[in-house]
Image 1 (cartoon, rainbow, N blue to C red):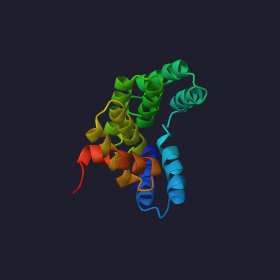
Image 2 (image 1 turned 90 degrees about the vertical axis):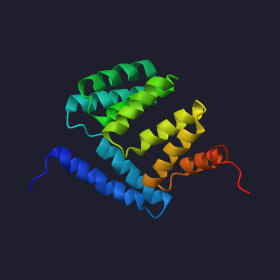
Image 3 (image 1 turned 135 degrees about the vertical axis):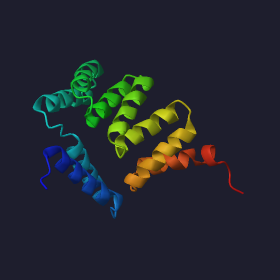
Image 4 (image 1 turned 180 degrees about the horizontal axis):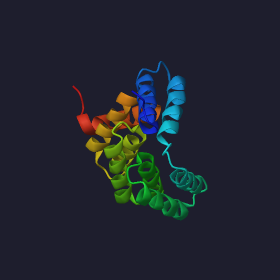
Length: 168
């Protein structure tokens, strides 16, 4: 049975995610994470890839308005492209628009439930809006996918007492 480009990409990302979950150390995890993100950023359309690149480039130079324009156009034209929604969420987050950012992250996760970046983003938003239990849950899900994420480990430690209370 021949796989089409989308199925081949999904298979490659799944294999990389399996390797990431089993990574021996943080350096190996970082390398695998970059490869996963690279697979996720392939839309299969030159136009959509260009809109994603323009949105990312605008974010890189803190031009949030331009990023929002490019990424909104991207998600309008490719509503099933998870990475477009994830990058749009980053732009909304940078604009301190936590509601739209959370909505875009939820769209990302509906399309790609293993998107650790979207889970991290939800954790950060939930922490920011003082919903420690939801933040803790999102961060815990990240560690199942990427066990060497030191920022997430720190966040879980920071939230532990608020969520689980003091142990005797």
